Image (cartoon, rainbow, N blue to C red; front, side, top):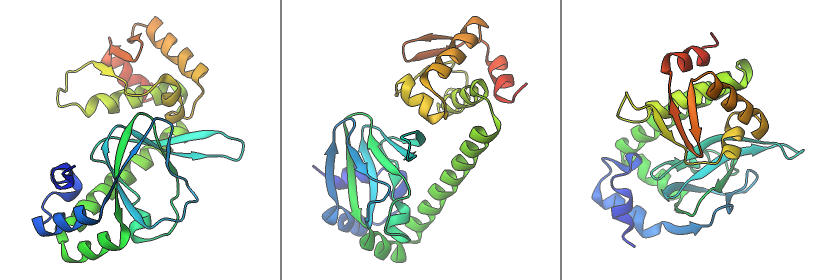
Length: 226
């Protein structure tokens, strides 16, 4: 596999010199995971930097009672493990493949050495961390202050906003409803009730993993708690 081709268009590595891309590729490990495989455990002692190449992963925290809260979903091109590459030796969450996936693992010492020589790489990392912080604050606000229908509405609007077509009103979920309930800090049963209520109110239509928004204004009002 040509690792350089896999990473040169990833946002994290844009602007990095060909020489350093070659150095990264020469020491990186390409690893495949099946759905349900644990990539990192939250107490694992590691010193590496990870980039999703294919598939989808989730970052999550688990309680002693087994309750799980999904923190974010990771798609191709998304990096994770920045804290273990630069700051700590243990990962603050677990990462699991939720479909067949492949991940590039780069030694933390190598990333640190290249970052010292490549201001562009540092800027890319800062931008990624800034967006992660913003997403984390949004998640905290949602879990602390909003009810399930409001959280669901905010999630759907955020997912739709990622598409270049601002008028798009159909969303194809890449995760199961059970996984979605973990993102929302809910139970599958509570999520089903919220979807059913919103469907009865003609706000949306659910067909498997396809959700079609019928009344975007009502969805926006619900997301704002109105």
